[in-house]
Image (cartoon, rainbow, N blue to C red; front, top):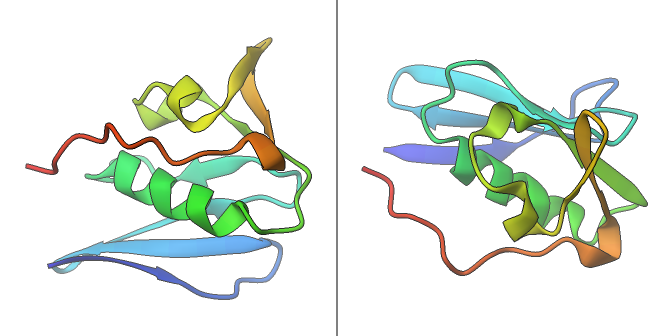
Length: 102
């Protein structure tokens, strides 16, 4: 069974773990507002969707992401700014065209 659980972790305004059976992968948002996940997470879009959903009503005014997610970040409201993507919190969105997990 796959699950995403949010928890408090010092230094991270938002942190979560994606659990896939015995495997656990960490992800979250840094104090600078950047989304991140551990390398090798099997369902990066699922983790990103959970984090975006959590941040839509949060206090971080501008959020950032890098290409490491393997998904089209524009679908979530991000626009490229140099080497990363940026999105004001009020423009974050959850796309309804998600792909089914294998």
